[in-house]
Image (cartoon, rainbow, N blue to C red; front, side):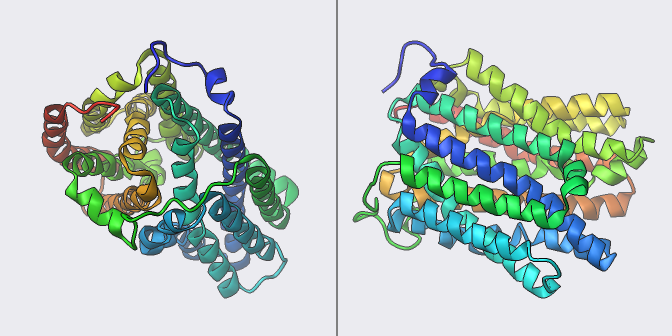
Amino acid sequence: MTTALRPRTRDVLANREFRALWLAESQSAAGDQLAKVALMVLVYARTGSALWAAGVFALTFLPAIAGGLGLSQFADRFPRRNVLVVCSLGQATCLALMAIPHMPLPVLCLLVVLQQFLLAPANAAQNALAREVIEDDEVYVRSQDLRQISNNTIMLGGLAVGGFLIAAIGTSLALAIDAVSCLLAAATVWLLLSRRPAPGGEMTSWFSSTGWVFKQRRMRVLLTLSWLVGLAVVVEGLAAPLAKELHAGDAAVGWLLAADPLGFIIGAFVLSRFFNAQARLSMIGILSTASLAILVLFFFQPSLPLALFLLVVAGATGAYHISVISAVATWTPAEMRGGTNGVFRTGLRVSQGLGIAAGGVIAQLIGSSSYTIAICAVIGLLIAVPATISWARLKPTVAA
């Protein structure tokens, strides 16, 4: 069902169970940002190797790519509240072990991988529960705005103060704080969420959701528009060489990385404030195309201020992804939401990894980060334009 008036944030937070999910997610996200910075600092300090530091960071992507699709199925096979709690406790254990001083590097890497593997079923359960605890479509979409704005604000905070905080408290304490944040998240979910049975029914078997997604035309189009993010985030892998190319200092690297999440926050606020769920659904194709079209302007090798502006605008139009997530959760049968989330999330991570890797190869070949960003954007447009036309022809509705 839908409401005549767009709900406000207080309408979203009036839902006790959503408050619990949002609070638990925010606690974990804040701790994770601190832990990522701490791990890079810790590994680099112990090895003196940029390759080792980058390699450990890359390990945070590996589990989502290698096992995210299968592990997400647990969110459909078992009670989702239990999945969230067990995964949070498992992550807390891994992080507590990482915090032990002088932990052997191979063991540290193994713990990083295990901790990240636990994120797949946890994220699937959390996203499925978020749709389950809120029945009203408009309130649900607004709740996703709040989640994404919170997560991106936390990401910005991590980029801004993470290094300073690590320098002040040390890497072991930072990892211990993340472990505590996971324990708090587990307690919040256990105490404040209602008990629900495992959602799996006759339609649920291992990977049944994967087949279901690819049989649905609207889901295939959504997949295409969602995974285009992989070509829009190329700048993340090129931030350092791009800053040098723009004749800016090392501080500009952080600014370039922060521009996209800042824009995303702005875009999410504007969409939430001025557009209802149906209008936002119709705009998915247009906004996904716009997010890439803006980056084509890097062909003109903009100055640093203009480059930052372009990245902020690209991030703002990229907020269409909230509507993608909402539509997927709404249109998927309850018993398959975990697995379907795994399909979208795993594909997104793969597209981001491949996009950043391809950007690095192209930049190495042509010797220009600005041109590389623009070339990747053009490639993205060749996919986005026909996908947008297909989306418009589908005439999707919120209640579909």
